[in-house]
Image 1 (cartoon, one colour):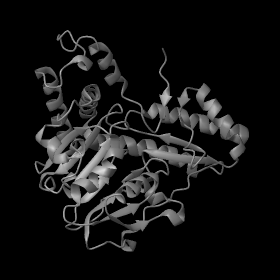
Image 2 (cartoon, one colour):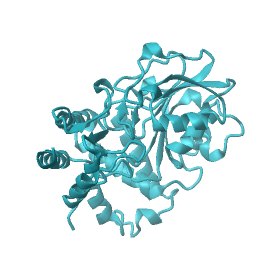
Image 3 (tube, one colour):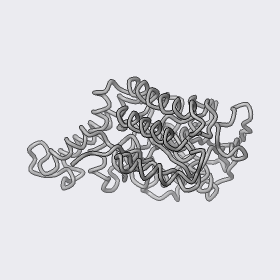
Image 4 (cartoon, one colour):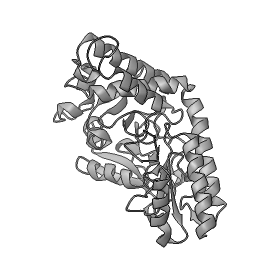
Length: 360
């Protein structure tokens, strides 16, 4: 069966090589006579899988010894609550930067537990840029500063790491993790849903500085308590074993590609060529200011909205799938995660040129 070009924002494309390995190992993992889905999470086979995955992720991101890596459940949405529950300590306030839909969701959840100070927002500009740091109004009583490095819906990305001083910096990196190198040491907490660049949905990665593990509210549910999960090596309850296993294969695949430095070069090249087509045309437009454009999620609109359905129909027939923009934005959106090949981007560009020639 032919594989399509999948531009989904998530769950997203996985490397074909990884899927083939999963297929080959599905019924009998390494002579065990079992599928990974059937293994005890506390058996030596799966413990070995888990330990290797953690080490490979630590290597890829250059995670310092000062930080723990947790493999949890509940998605990034679960961490919207886990962050204040684990980090407030004896403080009652937190700073958030609002750059779009996922920032707003984190803010709304944070307000259930503390006084949220929206230190900066790009809402007045339609979330088309990252607010300049000299405009941020930080609360000196804040327990942490939260930001979303990449907004999947609006296509806005931080291309720099905020300076939070002595206040722990918290990042929802769901849609940008593993796409480029990250200075983990400058972050108190990084969390990410797996379904973009890590692996299948159902797994959530949390990277937390160890000295922050003693701040949790005593009422924090055990499954959201980072310290309890760290003490249990992410196995306080049965983890999403199959998703963890596939994530480990993705980490090994990334190492074979040359690591995150190499992936950053490829991802920049993919994004640059698509933005170039958009910018050189009067037929397509991207609303985000150039300095804030995402390399992972590229929304674009047509000069004539009435042509959207025709464009999407032709894309679908050409095997270019899930290009419809989010309902809150409209138009089209191409998500260019690690497993989306340059060949896929070239095929999209060819369609865009041809469609403009016929309809522009």
